[in-house]
Image (tube, rainbow, N blue to C red; front, side, top):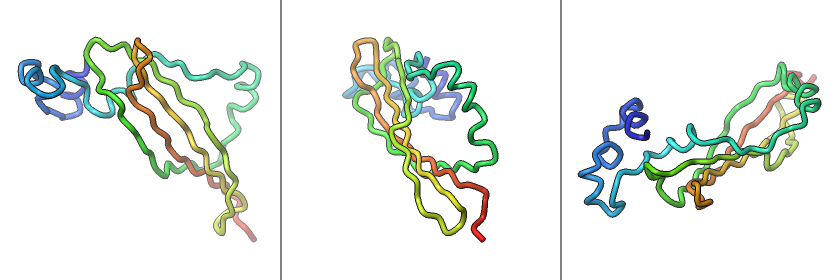
Length: 137
């Protein structure tokens, strides 16, 4: 499945699309390109109670979100036979001082991807800054 994904992204690296070439590499076969695992896999993220999800569904209306960075660590390559599972969760929320707005919050999200044998394939975290639109007087 990764071969069409790689081609669709314009990545024609033989390690991802040519089994004969990939068999002669240190990986001994094709592997998935970085980023593939972020778009695939059965979602195992924690879920909210339905009432809470409904009550908070519009909580950030009018708030600007800025993705301010992402760190990703790859532990093992994704192989063609791997069944992927992924999970994402909010790890922390920190209120920050802001000269621009009355309120600013830094949210750290964590993600993990693993295979059917529970071996981690990727871990990462991203930072999203939320800025309130209410300007200081």
